[in-house]
Length: 198
Length: 250
Image 1 (cartoon, rainbow over the protein chains, first blue to last red):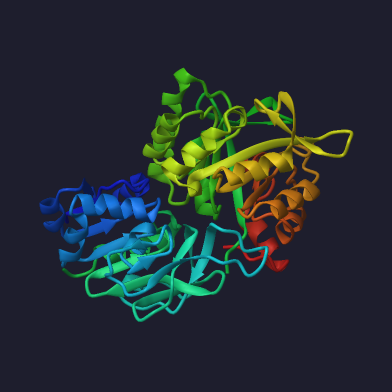
Image 2: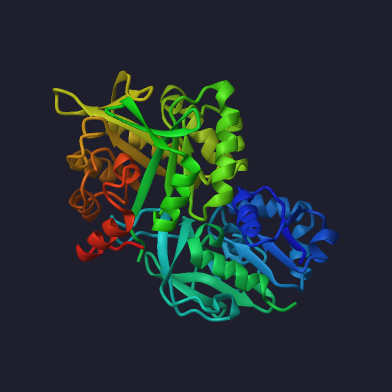
């Protein structure tokens, strides 16, 4: 199976590579449209800032490549946020794959720190991505912005209120948490993604 | 609900895990990759690796160790020790680290925090502060693994560090480190109230009740080393204890 990880200016993709290798997959890292669109599965990771990432994607035409893809596509963390319609992070227009908007956490109490860093539960799980994943499993999150709940929400997490832990429409999936760092639960979710039919 | 985190810390010297009391008297505690894998399996929430002998010529050794660890474990980990430039951080992140911790170099060059957080994002910049209470009752910053005192108050430095872009504070009380008599509650609380980012309490955790006390209070995470290395407390037992005391853990 040919798995391509989209290479761009946002962040640390090494842990995604190692997680895939533990599952017996050697991913290709690429920013070449043909390579990306010929993949069986596309992964769009990302840690960083939304507006500079969007600018970079647009300059290289990668925004259009993403929108053209028809194979199973997984955005992780910032990758998922960039697939939403708009982000409050530097008021950035995003790809619009998901209709949901990205907002900054507003703490209700002193105990709610921003960024949220650590393990939180995911619930109301829908789609094959969460096949055999138990409700209220723990996943690892690191983020200051979140996608609101909406029609594409397929998993929910509570922090400063409920928000989208995962989104799905057509061939596009997005997860806010880091499956590559979420121990056995994360491995199962990555396996499920790799097992999705073309 | 976001859980409180239990973080084993591995002090690394010449590729081996060591741990001393009050920052001296190092004892060998084993192979860091094996220890890391064991902790990940036992339910540790994150790991911290501090290279206490990091020097320029040894940084390559550290990067290759980080690479081995990253291949093996599926939970997040932080690496620290001798980091003083964007290039140092890039090498460690490229080797598979999720976050880096900076300490003395950031104190001497506070702009470093701004540079690193704008290059890599706040989420991967942990500001480590070693602190000690003086006769005037205030807590002061110490540098170079606790060997060099400064006149800077811990609280002030934590606030400045976060304003410059640190995404997390790793707060070690040198007065408590190695004592196994409990974490430094007052200073942890003071720092936690002063900054909007998570605070990891470190130094003094010797029994499950110490972890319950600090995690029921001001800390978002608790870090310890030798009690885990020498199996004085197992992580599953510790978590069961915390659950019994209504602390949300994974």
